[in-house]
Length: 105
Image 1 (cartoon, rainbow, N blue to C red):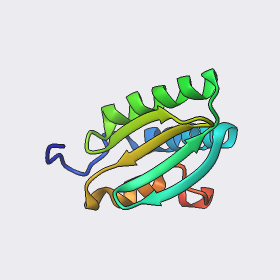
Image 2 (image 1 turned 90 degrees about the vertical axis):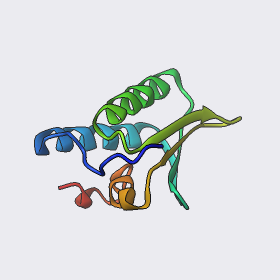
Image 3 (image 1 turned 120 degrees about the vertical axis):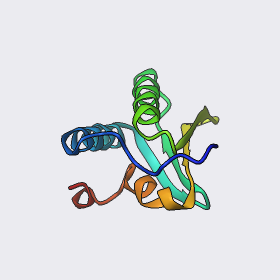
């Protein structure tokens, strides 16, 4: 990973819309959210729709938050999404799939 600034290019309205999309994806597919040493691991239902939406989210987040890394794979029972970044990005990572919707603006 290169040293990219910890800055999202989304406007405040864009950020609210993105977090709403993540919240909807979580409501439809989230099985488990676990903090990791370098970020976050999310287990999602393994369906074509959830996979499509997750891949769209990864593409969108990669465009606005280039300092984050995303790794999507599957195990025997779920899609596994690992999200990581530099230590200074932890507050941003912690917003993703946050269990407390009140944290979202």
